[in-house]
Image (cartoon, rainbow, N blue to C red; front, side, top):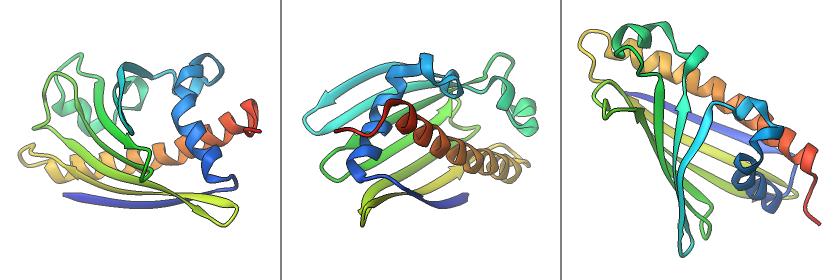
Length: 167
């Protein structure tokens, strides 16, 4: 198992960050960096937002995954819940087609205010049951995930800049 802990600070208020987090996928035409994400389903049950998203790996698939995933299995499925009373996002990401024996990413992300700024933290666990190369798979996915979180932060910052702070 590989664990990742990330903390990111945003130069925006918590309400602005939370708005950007939820709304940017509704504006994919303005944000080409999100073109690999497709919302499959979204529902709200009280204060819980539930989403299922498909994430295309396309050009971003680590070489080690190309050797263990079947041909055409280049889509990940993310199932997540966001609790807007605690600003906590729980998620699980697995290869499409029920291949969670190859790998699974499970995590919790929390959003909170820090003065006039805001912070989000990630605690992520990556597991792979691939014989002999499971550790390599976990490390490769961990590296990609860290990089994608950095890109995601930039995407949120860009979203806020383009659409503006709420009034």
